[in-house]
Amino acid sequence: MAVSPEEIGLPGCWQVIAVQRERLPLGVALAPPSVDIGYYVTSLSHAQHTDAELLQIIRDHWAAIENGAHYRRDHTFAEDACQTAHRGAAQILAALRNLAIGLYELQQERGHARVKEFTSWVRQMTGSLALKLILRT
Image 1 (cartoon, helix red, strand yellow):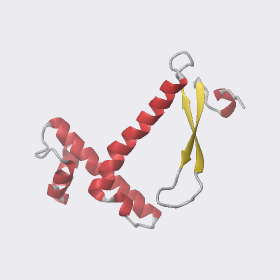
Image 2 (tube, one colour):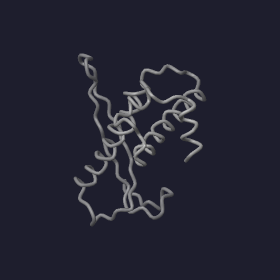
Image 3 (cartoon, helix red, strand yellow):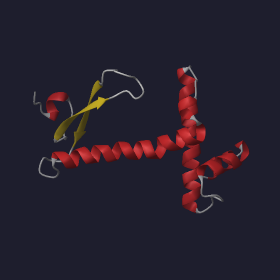
């Protein structure tokens, strides 16, 4: 069913895109695939990109997220293995992880990071050094 962005409360958007994904569970014999539909909105007009180009833009967006921030957070901080059950504590841990990533990127941009690898930088960081960086920014 076609609807306009205004009809769903998103004025200014030119397109609403539905992407159907089929997931096959790995390592589970004869498990049925699951179907998921993701909805996206864009201010790009129909004339600017083909359907294939829009799909590639969506794939690139999620690839950048997964290979950028999520990889760093899980590889360095083992975020996926964290079993913190309290919602507030999980939010605080996520905020601290984001703060560490932000401080590293700021130091790297300013040319003050002594190491090129984020993992090495995190190992060298202490609470007092982090506080100095926060107060300097």
